[in-house]
Image 1 (tube, helix red, strand yellow):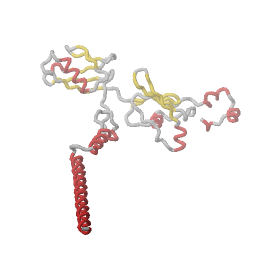
Image 2 (image 1 turned 90 degrees about the vertical axis):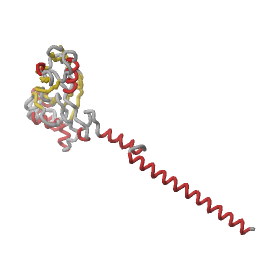
Image 3 (image 1 turned 180 degrees about the vertical axis):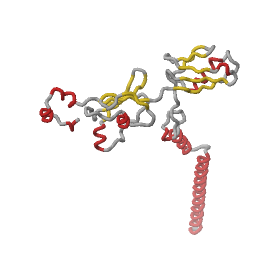
Image 4 (image 1 turned 90 degrees about the horizontal axis):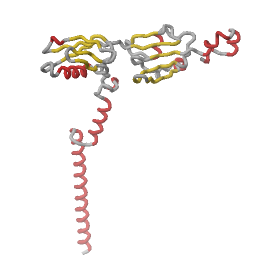
Length: 258
């Protein structure tokens, strides 16, 4: 009897092990199917995370970082720009217009349309809308004929203060070199960059170019944007120099501290 009982226990244990092994195998198969579903793009957290990462890297709204795959912002019209309108089905309405100081253009037979701040595509839609009712199925094509070239302004203690065309990507130090470099009265440690945010509001950046050049590290320099103003102030030595004799100036002031 005791032997029979032991045999029953052994058989029961073997059955239990068999069911546990079967359940484990089914779980592994289910996980495998889940992974295949995620990779196919149907479901799965992994796919969502990949999609979110792709959206963050490759923005397609014109404001993304070009270095990461985003498009550069589209050009927006401003005052004094000249645009050419061409109509496929109504060439008699073709016209060349200049954006007025108030931001409007005057369309032939359709009146004023606000153009400042629009992209060329947005202006096309605005012109089509303005001519709806005047023309059957207006299809305007807008081309930019003349525009204000990007520029920067350098002032203060630079060799040739003035307005310069911004033809390529430039840093602050490169722009100063284009403007004739520093004068001997320049305060290298406090170069100012003024950038327009919107009408009447500017943001200011201060750069210690003397320290950067000394450390041979220009990684913190900003890239210029159209309309930026660089101003190099006068150093303290040059301000008080007219009132001091040279021996007194050498005794109390060291030019290396500016």
